[in-house]
Length: 266
Ligand SMILES: C[S@@+](CC[C@H](N)C(=O)[O-])C[C@H]1O[C@@H](n2cnc3c(N)ncnc32)[C@H](O)[C@@H]1O
Image 1: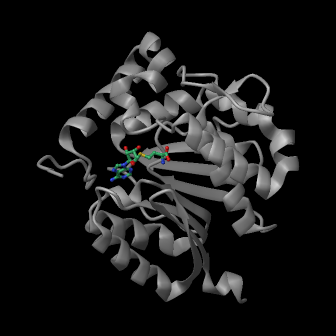
Image 2 (image 1 turned 90 degrees about the vertical axis):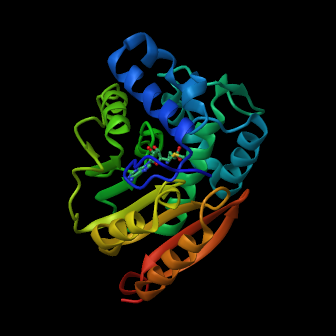
Image 3 (image 1 turned 180 degrees about the horizontal axis):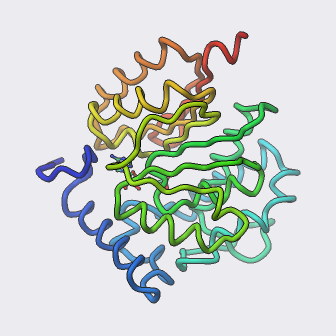
């Protein structure tokens, strides 16, 4: 892995990162690019690249976790596939087609629901949310008051355009470029899927001090392949100070479900 350009601490490979950011800018500036951004190869190296078979295994997990909620909310979840022309597939038991990436967001949503149980969730903060797909999927089953997405400036602009397609949530979702965010307090749920783990330790620690430390629950997926597992150990050591957590696997990645100690043991 070589990193020569500073992208706010993102340690992705230069060429891939440049192409991804260019695809985001094009999708924001040009409506015909927006219509197909989820199948643009320059975009899919980073996002919306879950394979059909992986989608099946996420669907199986979601079914095992809560079949009733899956059936009830499927049409709502599928709204995430309405814009950007994602690659979709047929799956047994599902009407029509669905994107395997949306299936992964459904699995993420069910894992978070399991962790949160019945605690009220008002303010959610997600770092590195891509185009905002998890926000859209989660909104089907979680009536949050505010969802704050923080990402690189080019990505943040795409999040705004994407979320604005959904009138029911657009006013509740804020998109803040990572160059402009400040400390946020009273967070109920902090999310980072395959994002914090791709940043320098310095950037991770800044997010920790300004956001993670102020949340009741945190759901993180840490991708270790191609990224520095020493960061993971340092980050986890920091979390251990104030959180209790369960750690699971998702292919080669680590899923962290964390609860502030005060919250789990009031
Ligand atoms: C692999 S993508 C994951 C996207 C999304 N969470 C998902 O699961 O589909 C990593 C995301 O992290 C974002 N990112 C990179 N550096 C960042 C930073 N310093 N602050 C916030 N987000 C960042 C990228 O722009 C990208 O949207």
